[in-house]
Image (cartoon, rainbow, N blue to C red):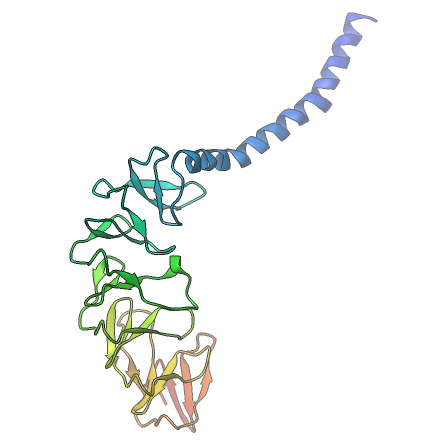
Length: 246
């Protein structure tokens, strides 16, 4: 066999055998590398829950976020790893010295009494509210003007709404007064609620204030319309986001 023929054979093998193998290997590495790195982090900094991890030697506590495929770790230098304990699978936690939301310190919160506000339909890691019995927290902020003794979740769509003995809250803000004993969803899937005093449109963007439908009684039959659930019709009257438009 001539050297020229051998060279041709090697070129053909390189093109049709070796090159595809190298391409497949490169693609596999690009896909798997983030997960290899993530697994490395999980071994060296195993998770306590979905928001916190602790170093394998047990000396450092980290808040964990996932902006992409890889976790980002934020060391919580004030946390005591020996007594650090998350509240369920949430981003709230406490040790013997202080309470936390993610990396933020809740300096006035009771470390022994802080607990999540109960809501069976909301997963722990999606809950933004906690209380220590005297103060209610929305993430790392105190909720002003709320009664911690009577506060509870109000089941309304996929959002986190709270109600106490007088008012309705969203994102830690007081949206207005309601009667909690008669408060109800006007119709599932639409942005309206009602109590004995009237019917209200519930916005999810600023300004976060309930909009009472003037002239509409809670017993009134409304026709709810719109792809964003913001329209309501009563006879020949049309309301948009709680405001009469015709």
